[in-house]
Image: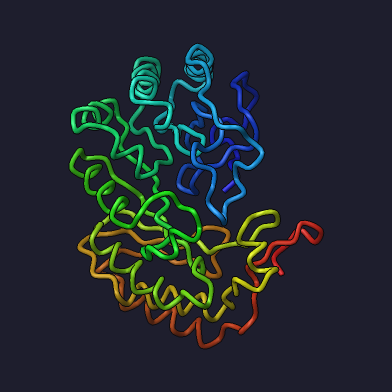
Length: 307
């Protein structure tokens, strides 16, 4: 999601390279850029960082931004460190930034960032606990799918087991992981496998936060080319809702907040599992019965809307 810059909508001298993205839940957070772009940047569905070359900003520049924020927004309670995987800056750099945020923002309660499995698993238990002590307490991880075949095809760069291990290791350090699953990412052909395997992996993770987004097919991405070549068939609106219903029906979670409130989703959904599972399923089943068998997940820049 493209960020409005949280509490930084007012004039400031903080520096940002390119478009800035953040999860919906970080709308009121201070946005601080440590890395530029994504160190992987090969996911077939993603166009967020295609116009950026990955790099780590000089720490002096990042610290200058923290000083600016401390002057303008001393009441800041939440900070989101971007870009795509700020932990790729390395433990020392990331920890230094967290430490400086704690020193300069006395009201700070939480630091969050996008993470990937590789970077989480590269940290030792002591390093993860150190970051937690510095208030890094929430990472957003794009699972996308629990199907190994889907992940390989979309060039995710991680296996289902990698991501299960990352969530478990983070939780062992008291760092919560918000897991993101993508509806429609397997297309029609792999939808049944995507449903079953995604539910299985999420059940093994037992995340405290779970978000569903809908795959939007964007121009100049590999998945767009596959669609044009006839190698990928997008889901219709009805199939997309049925896919979410199928995953949700198979979830056996102990205590998880579930959301599908991103702008890509066909209908807003939020609840806590297992308490709200029956009610959410009933709502989705009603919505599926009324949804059209039309494709609306293909983006055209010329019309500036979903088809």
